[in-house]
Amino acid sequence: MLVEPIKHDPKVSSSFSLRKSTVDLLEDYRKFYKDRTGQDIDKSEVVDQILKKAFTSLDKAFVAWQKRQQDVREGTGEGASAGDTAAAGIGEGRA
Image 1 (cartoon, rainbow, N blue to C red):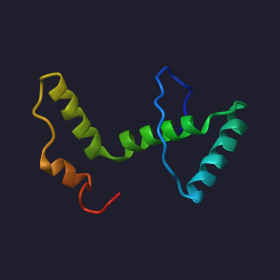
Image 2: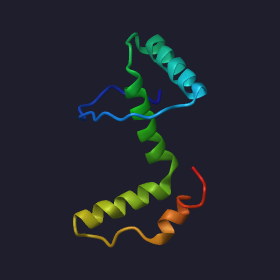
Image 3: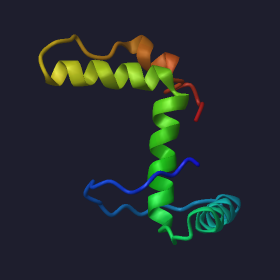
Image 4: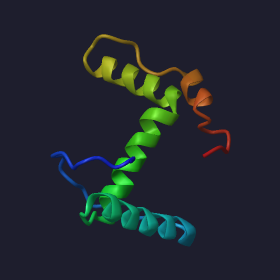
């Protein structure tokens, strides 16, 4: 399963709209989760965990960029380059 047991991480409220087909998938996944685990899961928890997995397992350019940003914050690196945003499809009309 994509969703794992909940770990402590403070929540921050965010408001956004989703397409109906995405909301339908979200509801189906919640039903699947309950069927498999016997536990209910909040919509926001499903969205949170799936987004984290997508960002960290599907977009290697983002992971590399994020690592460089962390290195800069810690004073051990030089940060992101213009090529990082191009490699990630930022500014090119890709989502």
